[in-house]
Image 1: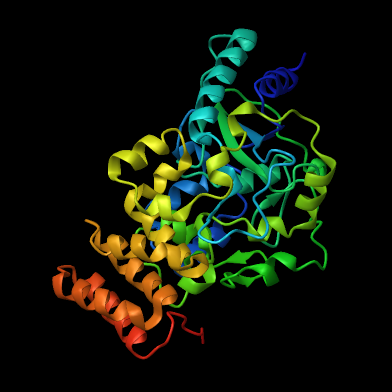
Image 2: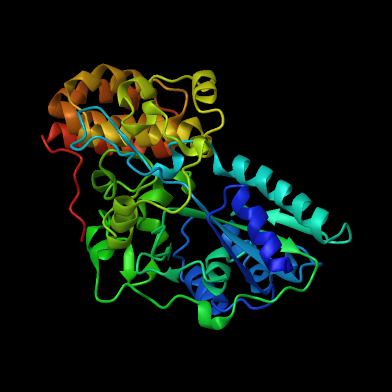
Length: 392
């Protein structure tokens, strides 16, 4: 067997769905990425700018890299779906987070893949496995390796998997032929613009161009601060990530309807409590309970303060009066980020009845940012207006 066949054989046996090869020094979209970062579209993800130049060449991550094995891991379990319509006081979690943390799963399998490759090709072969935690333009490499094309929603799309897959890389110290340019997939989005139209926050600047500052996935996962008040009503019940631009994609509909050629992995089977989680119960989680409940889940990335911030916003959008006691209790939370968003949500549900608890919350508030937000919510309650702000 050729070396590339050996690698693909082991990768598929380990559960990876697609395998391709690229050169470490052949990044094609760096200039586009640099322009995107320089225009501020990365929001508060400062690490994307600080380590920007490292993305020019994969060898800046590991100097011995001479080939990049690019791998796709399908995570969406065929047939699994959240309730529609969503019941009151229930939230939405992005489907990639329904099961285990893919970082843990992929890291172990990348180590196993490297050992299998070394066993067959020789111990002199060295390698490093990486995911999205390192400065690598993995979508660029994925397109070069034949794993898909850039969709208008800025995601990599494959005709059989849709966009429901993670990308991982195994850097190797040996020269291997990259996937031929003729095997790259042409853009198959055509005239379709479903993803652009469906985005709740209108986060797309243009086809293929995303403003992360308006993206719900960014706002609920990567962004650590306060969610802009004008965007909160548009988030709906989403508490961790957003699948809207994927849900409406015809290629994803096709993948869900026809299934996939490989097996579903047990690690990504959905946890029942994440298909439509109880927001009121989530808002009551202590630090210890949060850590225990989401051990092994990517939700830990948001941390309790960010996750309960999201939960409060979601309750303001999809909650009913049953949520009022939990939101009033959250006005006493140790985290100012949670307190301010709970105040906003309380006005959305209780209206003018929120004035009294917000008066007290403002009096005891010690954080300037939270106090200002609570005052804004209180004023909306006094004038009988919900927290909705029309975007200009």
